[in-house]
Image 1: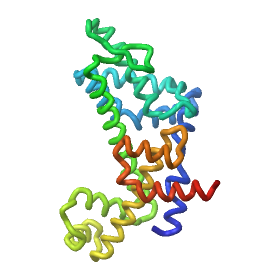
Image 2 (image 1 turned 120 degrees about the vertical axis):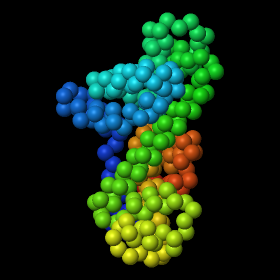
Image 3 (image 1 turned 90 degrees about the horizontal axis):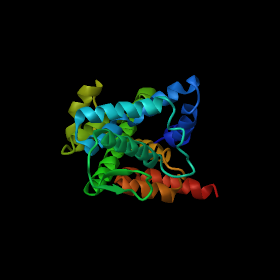
Image 4 (image 1 turned 60 degrees about the horizontal axis):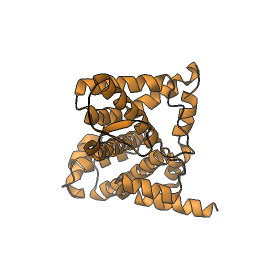
Length: 254
């Protein structure tokens, strides 16, 4: 990756999530921030709610309630000094689930979460719901990293998104087998060496984009905290190089 690429990395130029949350807590001037927050987490919210209520129609209605809360600026209670933003969002969704079961009048054996003032789900559902939330959050982060990579390609003209996406969709192909289909897609002849170079650059950039997304959601984005979050989300494999760069920069800044 060139020096220019590194200087334009998302790690150094991100509009932070916490800044967005603070803007979203304001008046009408924060509507764009609230809309962006809603867009970011709608998919993960729907998946989590669907797993919790086991009713697609009800899950969509609850997702609309969540969207309304976001658009009204009700995520203003999120505090970067407290912990991970995904835990705060999950707490908001859990309370929606509690209200749903109360409205339904279900007489179920409920278990209290250690840090929750209200029962949230049957005891045998809690582990499943937590896994579903982590899976949904993980997928949203990956989606956003792909979108950032596509934006980088559009801005620079370097086809790292096209090449890496093709590689991801066709993992069985070797570099020399990718030259013809990629050449047709890109409208120019390419070599196996060029393909390997673009895959390497794409993976580097993708790891940086993904790490930036994750750093944006935790209160203390130091190397140790980032590594723990990556491991919990099973994303460490994508970000080893970017994490090492982050760690070296942090050490140099001491």
